[in-house]
Amino acid sequence: MKKIIYLIIILIFQEATAQIDSELLKRIPVDSSRSLNMDAVYKRPFLGLGKVPISIGGYAEANWQHISTDGISDGHQFQLRRMTLFVSSTISSKIKFLSEIELEEGGKEINIEFAAIDVEFNPLLNLRGGIIMNPIGAFNQNHDGPKWEFTDRPISATEMLPATFSNAGFGFYGKMYKAEWMFGYEVYLSGNFDNSIIDNNQNKTYLPAAKSNPERFEEINSGVPLLTAKIATRHEKAGEFGVSYMGGIYNKFQDEGLQVDDKRRVRVFALDYNNTLPNLGTLITAEWAWVKVDVPETYTQQYGDRQHGGFIDIVQPIIKRKILDWERATVNLACRLEYVDWNVGHFREDNSKIGEDLWSIMPAISFRPNAQTVFRLNYRFQKQKDIFANPAAKTVGFSFGISTYF
Image (cartoon, rainbow, N blue to C red):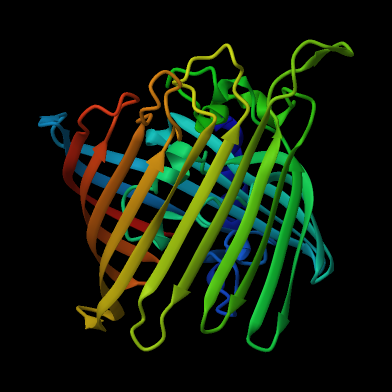
């Protein structure tokens, strides 16, 4: 994988170098027209490479943190969380391609998060095929670091839902406008979850475990594709509201035509909302999801069959003016509220509530010299209970980070 990525980069820049002129590297303006979360993959800054029919871009995130749990800390930590490369090409007026390749933990992990061919038949009917990003909730598709005021991704999106989650598949999407309203939809059939969501080193029902299976881009454990569908509507003043569903059979229930197990399903239902309040400029982003998993009766109660959780971000600009040499700099105050319950319900023996839940408050201050770059300082206060609802472990600490498109 590394050799392929390096080869692509070398070929692009060799071709570009052969055509050096004053227009070689030209920033392509970001489309500022009304958009939905489903447009996030293309709503990014790109660089055009002269006459080469390819545009490139990307972003990087670097962080420092000092976090402790119940007074125990690993001390100061520095991280290059991720570096992501975008490569896009408009093949013709109706056909385009975009890929997103992410390098995490200093390059120890390299993932293709998106690599899809889009074919437009009509604004309401477009075909997408390749490695698609499953449109569950809002964050999974709109996850770029420079867009957020927080160094950490939402816990509910990454530790309950498997963001960022992508699979090989095909589907359709489209949108339409009417006066102040916008409507969009997406529906895909893709690779699916597997048994790892209930057979993992977390010892609980854990959807993100499926991301560790590299075979999901080539075969489906159950032989039945995952259905992901979303509809969203946006009003110029009321904001965007989305409803999404993701579900399918995750276990191998037949072998050579013979049924060897019951069909076991995973279902995810999510709501999301985002809006910028007029006059105040307050940005609100919220997501809440419910997870239902058919867990075998032979499993203990620590493997929950129901989960729910979500987050809300509130970002308030307090300064907008020229700072140093940056003409449109912004200082923001922000706060994220989070909650996750990985095992909703009560023990059968005594009807006491099952624990395995978490809540967190994260105030933040951020500085944006421009729309593509953010400096952010966060403080986390978090409490997490174990399955027996013992007194919660308290996690506190600071983190500072820089994230920018390039």
